[in-house]
Length: 500
Image (cartoon, rainbow, N blue to C red):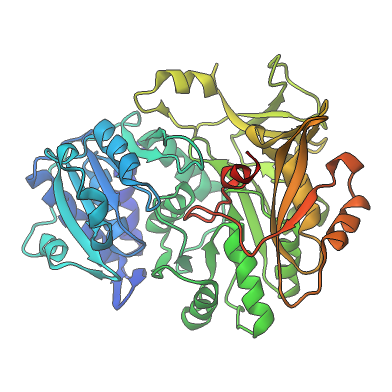
């Protein structure tokens, strides 16, 4: 049976003696990891959790998170990872919809739940962590409890995850991800990808995020050690890479941007790194090149919570394609369609990115209208603007809601940001459209600059004028930092608030 339940049963045992989880003062082998998964699954059964029931997790990155996740998946429960950045109001909406049987949470998030008594009446609350330590309440789950299970078999169409999108605007929507799509993805990755058994992965990206869950599952079934850090800062990440001889990590571009700033201040031994992985938003081209100068390979993936992984780029695909999001991974088909006529566009023309894949989600939970807007005839509409070149490389030009309409011309913020971030001394930027009586919208760039550089607005504008059409050259505003959510994504609507 092609399910995560099957994977937990048969794949974790292959790595029994290898180190699996490391966080704080706790290290677990795969044998110990699997034993804890089984005992937690037994605990859930004793509490009356049945296949299809929801189990919510609001925990930071530590060894208890993957144990809860796999324990719930093993008995066919649906895991609902909760984002740390959600407000009490947003959490209330998720709890109302998902009605979790049990909620595992870290002590620091107790205030989020305290006003929500009416939504918690049918939920067992378990405090699982305090900082990098697990609680006595959580550890008692593993004392004198058998690890042999008598459970109901999970089938491919059964839900595994209910992932609420982190989006920077609007209310989160619950993405339904079933066992079959995830198991197929992991199987295909194992067949088509490289083997990483015995390597060490720094799990510093929030575990509730799709890309982190991806690596958590790959690690559990591929013999990879997950090493956890508590709210790491860029310099702490670099020190941990040195100390623990980390081979890989995943983070959003903003984290790597500030890691580079630390690397310019003093040297770090990064010789153990085989790859830095990024994605989730546009990765500035300069990051790939600057890390290359330090002898570190950087790769990127493109996808979404709904689509999982769509494409990837690695340096061996050619540096002339570094501006792209790479090529679609095996079994993923990509088309570019006119957003108005829905006709397929030829290579080079910009339209909406549309994909077909065995890994696409099953729809939005209890939201048929939103599902029908993005899933049409087996194709998922990503909401991104982009194009394909003659060789099949995918280029993302931005979110359609972020496209700036200057008169009758479209300006794609990613293109302008990529130019600005090539200016020596620029750390990061965000380009938005601001109202204009003549042209409708004109571009404005908010730019963060390294204070050690003597850089004026005219320097940035001059650089842009040499590389962009005049109507794409933005007004420049220097800022100390850009507004971001807790994942590190830039929140552009917060910048637009300055323009209303």
